[in-house]
Image 1 (cartoon, rainbow, N blue to C red):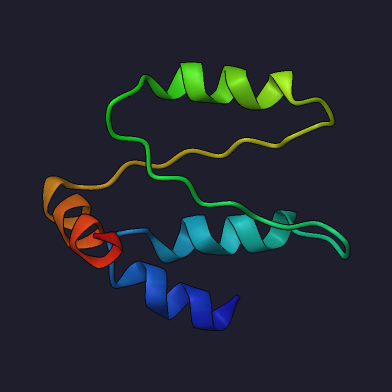
Image 2 (image 1 turned 45 degrees about the horizontal axis):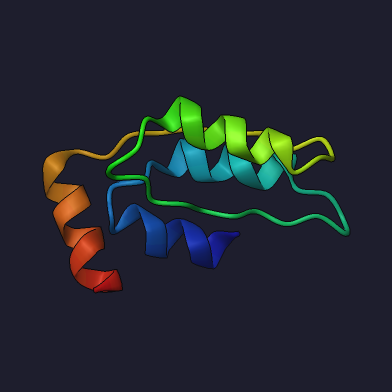
Length: 75
């Protein structure tokens, strides 16, 4: 997670949020980071719950500047 902390904090995701995600991870689990732009986050979360299992959803927001920087990274 240390490598991710440095990388994602460069794009406006707080170190505290990244540490919180890392604390939730257990052996055999994973984290998925999704950038939602044109949908309501609640609708996206609802779709994940339809997939079954027991997803633990965590959300954070980006400043307009951080959003622009991240979008430039992912094209």
